[in-house]
Image 1 (cartoon, rainbow, N blue to C red):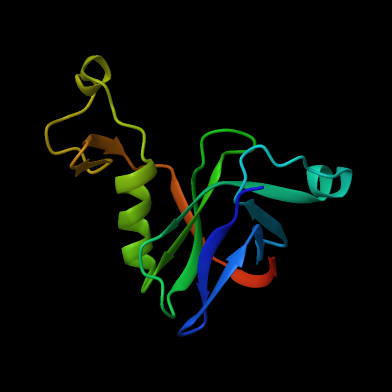
Image 2 (cartoon, one colour; image 1 turned 30 degrees about the vertical axis):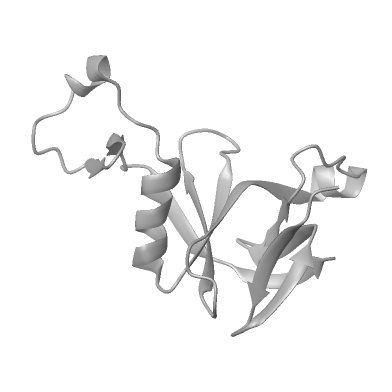
Length: 138
């Protein structure tokens, strides 16, 4: 079973199998092992995170980001110093690149486009919320 090292608080590093967060009136669950078998309770009562990006570590805040473009979009957990830093990390790491064919539909200075190292990302539907870490599964 896969584990991940996560820093909790200012300097306590623990090896965890998963993390649970409170967000938007429900539980958001991330598991280190992508092949984790979800229990019925987890399957129906919790939202599963699609990924975790911890760029900040010591004492950073937790945020959940997603593209609001479908019924249950994949949510990514980002740890950063500020909401703005988390937004930038989400767009850079997980944003869908607009391909050359679709890029023709945008004006050159379209405010929906954010240019990253990987290429242009349409950020019109990006949503983010602060998370509260409720438990770590060791």
